[in-house]
Amino acid sequence: MAIDDNRASREAVLARVRAALGRRGPGANATAAAHAYIAEQRQGPRPSLPGDRVQRFLERAGDMASTVERVANLDDAPRAVARYLDAIVSSPPATRAGVCWPEFATLGWTEAGMSLESRPTVGHDALGVTGCFCAIAETGTLAFLTGTETPTATFLLPETHVAIVRADQVVPGMEEAFELIRRDRSQWPRAMNFVSGPSRTGDIEQTIVLGAHGPRRLHIVLVG
Image (cartoon, rainbow, N blue to C red):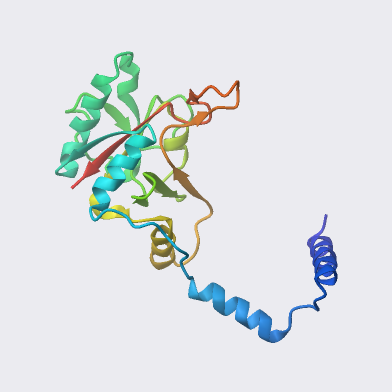
């Protein structure tokens, strides 16, 4: 269907809705008012959050079945990841090899007993280490924006996903996350992903199954 056909179909549907409501088409004033309302980017009513938003994020991430560890410095992250892998009883040696985002390529992975490559995954990597664009305290959610330096497959394909998050990346809610995107980026990314815990589904007999559409495990290393 051509774009013009889509537009014609949309206008036909809207015309029927206006007729049922006894309204005419939007005039210039109504259109300007709608654009002004959107530009204001108003926020609706929201619940209050505890004062320590970082602690709130860690608690809510745990509620979402993520595991978390807090470290003082970024250089401590590789050993924190190694400790997490040691805690996975069924973890095979292959889990210690995988891929990471370019920003973490120079960390001491080898010294921590791991082998991570800074490249896009092709689907067989057991471990993917990423950062995030920001983290949302209200829901324990990680926000990811697509880009050449932040490949999406790194946190979608491996069975174990480790996200390294700086404390200053934690924002109170989804509203602040979108505000940060608008402020930080000159244009919207091609795609955004919001991840709350490991992948799960309850479609079959209402039984929760982890790793159905993504990682089976999500571990968060919070720095700072």
